[in-house]
Image (cartoon, rainbow, N blue to C red):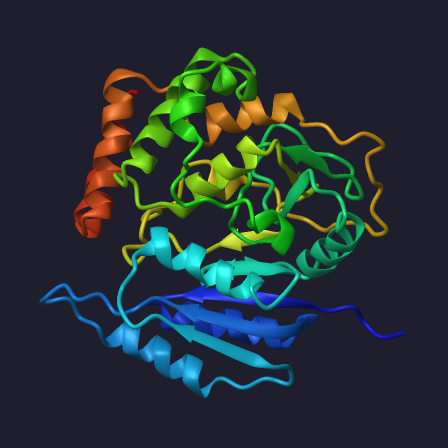
Length: 326
């Protein structure tokens, strides 16, 4: 029996060591084609660009037993535009596939998990993506079960062309939805979550946040799309360092995430509905929606420092502030 395979998109930029590791993993995984997308080199004077050129050299010289496709942007688009451009390029050629940034390390069960559910939900328009992430620390489910979330965790995921077609970078529907009770309904009526996500969408639509995933979250919520959550965390993110655009240091909770295997065949839920308790846990513990005052200011300040290029200073400051009571 021939092993089923799936195309994979790799998104890279300036971390040649991570890219080599991921490409090596993919050569040993059930992939039918490998697409690699690289943003243009940053033009900021004085920045050492050797790692960017090394990434390009790796991509140009990479070969595999499956077709390899390469997209290199002529100019630097930034994360907020380069990633969705890469995904649109990918789904312009494939009906479905797996998406991995260069700092993602999938377990051996990630690909069969994604492939089974890409098949199972291929015609289900309400299922938008299959995440490889389960970040909950408070609940461990049976290894052959999975759940649904409104949150689309994207540290290793899979989706379909039909779902990505709903991505709208302009978030054109947000101004009118902001004036309605739509966000209250989506967030289960929790005031802290409503405040947080209203602020996030306001900042994102004004391009004050260079993050494509918030726009993808908005697209999913606008269409009432669901994300599959695996029973165990199936993708590890190793990219918490000064080269990362947003996650320059690992969150305190990340090292405690239980990792494990999935048992096949999977048991599919009889009813597709959001795990409301799980989404509330994610809002509070992952997105810190309950943070107020100085704690929120501290978080915003660190993100701003990282975004403007003061990554190493942000790392040192974050370390000093860990002992400060929120």
